[in-house]
Image (cartoon, rainbow, N blue to C red; front, side, top):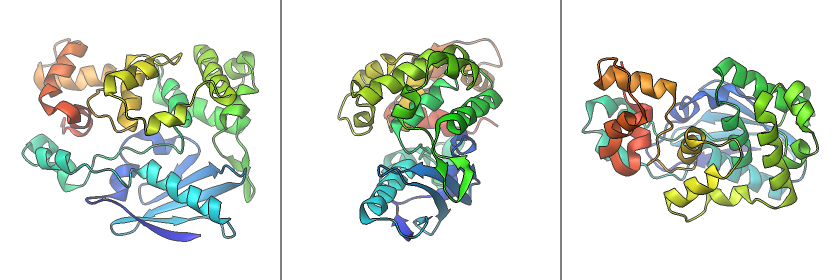
Length: 288
C-alpha cells in the first residue's frame, strides 16, 4: 500500500512528529522525516507503517496485500495519529500576534502526535508519571516486547499490546518483568476494564462532552491524576488544559517570576488569556 493522505492546512508533518516525545516510545521509531510505527490491525495482522511528509499531507507505505478493510483501518488510524482533520486556524490567527508564538504559526505547529489508540496513550501517559524520561522509554519498550505481537518481517519489532493481551497478565509480571513498579496495578486494571467491555475508552476520542466532564472521566481511571488527565486532554484535542509538571513550573517561573518558586496557579494564570488554546500556548511558547 502506497497512499497519500491530505491534511487540513496549514500542516507540517515534521512539526507533528516533533510535537513531543511520543515518537521515541515503542512501537514508534524513525525520525521527523521518516516515522515508523508497528500497528496491530483489527484482523490480527501486524504491519509496519512508514510515514513521510508529502506536500500538504502524508505518504503512507505499508506491506502489499492488505484487504480493503485493513487499508481503510490504516487510513483512519494515520488520520487520527497525525490529526489530519484538525482545524487549528483560530489558534494560528491568534498566535501571529504574539512574538513568543510566532514560530508556532509560521511552522504550523499545534498538532500533537498520538498513538493508534487512546488505550495506548493512556498507558504511556501513566508510565510518564513520577519518573525520568529514560525510565518511561524502558517501561514502554518492556510492555511492547513482553506482550505485543511481532512484525512477521522482523520479529524483534512488535506492536503495542491490545488490552486483552495485557489483561491476561498479572500484577507481579507487570511489576517485576515489565518493571512498571507501582504503576502495574493501574495498567492491569485499565486493560482488564477495556478488555471486558466495562470501559469504552476509544469512545472518548469522539465524545461530545464538555471538557470538565471529559476530565472527570479521565480522572476516574486509576493512575490518572491532574497532570496525566491534562496531558490526555491535549492528545484528545482539548487545549483548555495545561499538563503541569516540574518542567512547567520551572519554565514559567523563569519566564515570568524571575526564577522564584511558583505553583500551578501561576502557570494557569500565565496562559489564562488564551482560553480554549491555553494548552497549546503553553506547549509551543518560546521560553528561550
